[in-house]
Length: 370
Image 1 (cartoon, one colour):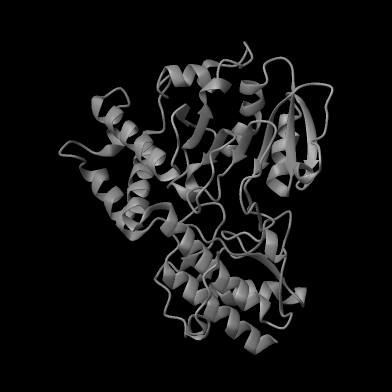
Image 2: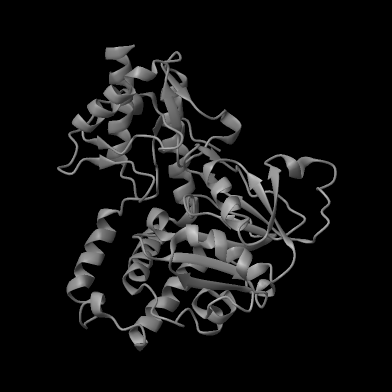
């Protein structure tokens, strides 16, 4: 439940932005200063040895790092036994193809819930490799799920649509194993693992830096890959090799380890969820009380707590909004190129000062242009 926003938080004057300003890009989440310091120190010397940048993936030190990272992730997610935690590369977009190639074998169909830009991208890529059944987001509320001539192996959904500002309030109940792209809201809220077949997420939004892709797959879904699938893309082969069938993204795994440790120290996922609710409520309150000057793109029931997306009643003011935001040290507020408008990204590592500065800017821009 969203925490009511303190009115003073909206009206407070903006503090001076740091030298590099505040960034709200959906492409990459900021790292907290504590994590930056830990990573910087490890680049010089880590655990009494050399730089983590030269850490061999075949070393015992890396195995310990990897297993600690997996253990932290399991604790934070409340992941029950019976799942493999894989560290891969290629980003979430690679998983659009690798999921059907790993889970469908030569037969069967994949159901995809259409909720926005990224769910459609996932369905389009999957359709190159398998038969895809596209469903509306409310299809599962119907008295009986759709019947298909080919067995449906899984149901794919995008938990948070970064381009559209649309988010599932909770994972739906499904007659098929759920496959969830959680790249943009991983560890921002608790999830119910009941029915979860596979979860994947690129790491640069929630877990650190580009290069690492997390895949969590239920044991009973292994062993279904197409024979032609290369080994380094085969979930079963990777699980058997403990994600070390080829060189894993060592540095990105280290940064994820540091970020997971920071989340634990803050109070875990419950603390992250409270912060996300408070921040997004403050932003939406500023938009909703603007008298129509700002126009949120999504109704309250489906609004993202991570990516408030909105437009201006007078669209011609959008370039001026972005220009003046940059002058105030607020960067990357433009919407997705295919959707347009404006967008705020509120990842776990976003500092409080950035949110306060944004709220003050929204108020000031409306005052001077409304």
